[in-house]
Image (spheres, rainbow, N blue to C red):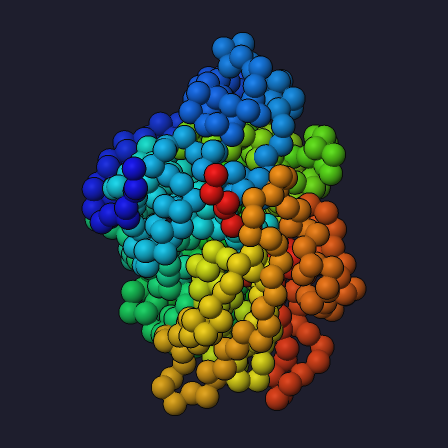
Length: 518
């Protein structure tokens, strides 16, 4: 059977019904103690294991000998670890819905613009490469996506109930493309009790400011990097808004961001963590520690040897088991973020941790501000690209890419130029240089006996991403990646040089896998 991308309406109607029907229960789950959470986790885990063993050839092999009916939470540590590269390599065998393949998932991503295009009206697909740098595809059915969304919005619902309904709309300054969760949210929530108005971060800064001034948001969401820029616009008198709450998402919220947001908008910033894999959490306004939805995902904070880390010790990775997405089972899946566990809250059992990761470096061309997502989105849409590095130049950008197969360089150049010029720059601007200056083949096209290690690609060894404080070619295994992308010390045409590999400020030596059909 060949699955086809469909219109949004049937999926949206079912999604909203499931979402808002479950929100009261989700709010109640926030009060659960550790014993209640573990009871719920065990029930969901046994059902997940049974379904994955029955319907996923990949999991049937790796979980051979497991009896879900007698499985206990303490047994989770005995299960093998699953990586994103491994998931993408065996994508067709990982998923449990036979309509869903690497090819149909890629076709859905290719067909997605500013609104999601569910496959057969039932499956939505997200693309992610922002956290680990490794490209991943993640599919959800209506029920699972509603569970995912409910775990994200329940802290918002609690704060709104306590503070009263805001006087202005809820506005999110984030992705325009619906291949990202922040881009998919506004069209999926349109017409609901909690609508989001999208102001794409890919617009020119002046247009973002103008739209916010027109909208006068009561609640403002956005990437910390752009919220800090908007705070400066507010302090400089070009932006005139008075949101009653500001929430950062998708990137690391730095102390400098917190100070700027508070100074500009007179409210403490809340923080939200969300991964396309399903792990989500939130921190109350003014607080650093994030409380994660332990009822939805089991999260193991581990060292380099996959052993648990004690409280106060930063993890090398997080192993997550998504308890609600049976379409694409993620069981002890390695998430390359660093968490520092904190003590549980009194009479509450959800995981609490401080998070290190997910900053973004903004390019500046005089008065023109370019968020990395502007450039990352067309690069993410090309499935053959394994790795890339972007460098700021005086009148544009230079891009170097690695690929697993031939990349149409002319098309990629056109896509990048279009991304830079369509909304960001005035018609008479000369900032139109987007040049793919080098392409290299990184991996063979044939199926690998074992998934390739993304940290031992020719790109990582060549040291193209050498930056301030990073020796050429320096890499560290798994969660440590490489080092922070900073402003470069050299200059060109009086423009401070910046560069990043992938859209995170941490250069992850972006070893991006494409899925290999079985």
